[in-house]
Image 1: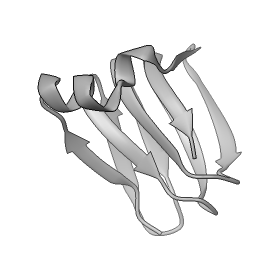
Image 2 (image 1 turned 60 degrees about the vertical axis):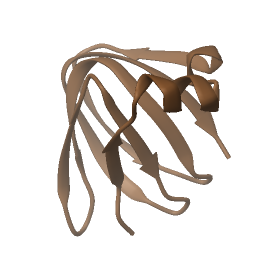
Image 3 (image 1 turned 180 degrees about the vertical axis):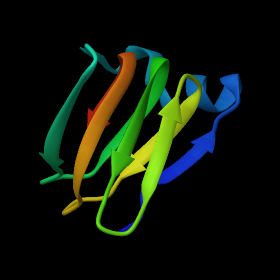
Length: 88
């Protein structure tokens, strides 16, 4: 299972209604997480390293990310995070 990361244009962000999604924030920390449903999110600020059994991905402001259902990982929040998110 791979974490998908890409950049979206403002037009794509508007078309998907991302700015109306819920907002999640998290302080500097480290925690385990399991995705029992897929998540899409747009990072507004902060920096994290997400480690799975096969990869470590750095995420930061401007990244649009899709975490697949069934993914187990460890989040290391290096700078406080703020993101829009939705679960499928």
